[in-house]
Image 1 (tube, one colour):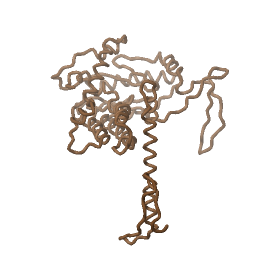
Image 2 (cartoon, helix red, strand yellow):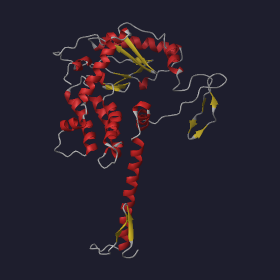
Image 3 (tube, one colour):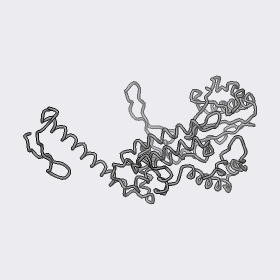
Image 4 (spheres, one colour):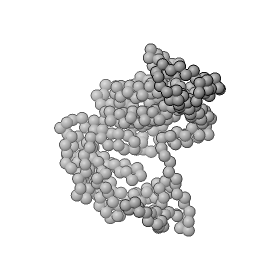
Length: 368
């Protein structure tokens, strides 16, 4: 390419090469780098414009926003249809050392994700044995046994008796229990009570852990919610990083749609199950608020001297702690008048401001 050759840019044919280089680099290298930068800029502009045209029409009323949120967070799998001569047409195959077998018909069971699965599961497990001094919680194939006692040894004996009866029921009905995936935990703040007898399933000891995950909530042995807050922040940061091309100040997406993405994708991850852990200490809640503040500041490219409270006021944004309290007020009001007696009993207590150990309903007394 000779001197004076025009190079196209976004405004047209207006850039010309003079050939005066102080670095001594070959002229064709300079031209190649300039063209590469312009191509990358054009591709970035095209990507931002495509996202803008995709996001701006989203509307929560027609479920388009909800579908986009689910697509960004999880990868959906197709649900097999329910049809056939027997009512259920399900095929399966196995894979061994890279070799796949042919598809075979399944004569029992239902496809995963169908509406029949929860009802059939409830019918099948309706006669699970219950024991005194223990309670059982069932959700899909997850089973939780809880025993309450002031002594860890007594709680362990209660759990062992309940576990033995449940193992006997499972063996009778050909239901396999995976002891390797079972976890035991003692909730206490007294170090002397953290040792108890081992609980076994069919002779296999259940591993002991300091925390475990149940229905998306991480429970630690002291119930201080530090581990859950750390995992919540980690997931929210991953979502924020994936949305950064849309939330950064250079993106041409409107501010309304940027805030809508934060409210519909990042905020639900930060406040998931907050009714259970919203009474955590202020230090944990401030860490969650910091993640949200960083997303807001990057959205509007706020300089360092702009305070977070001014940013919330200008954007008319609600802080996380106030969002958690508002959600708790609605949930506890609904649970108090619920038809389920167990749900009413779970929230039937008066929180005490002077209590040393805070309970979930304590967040109703916290300032918003």
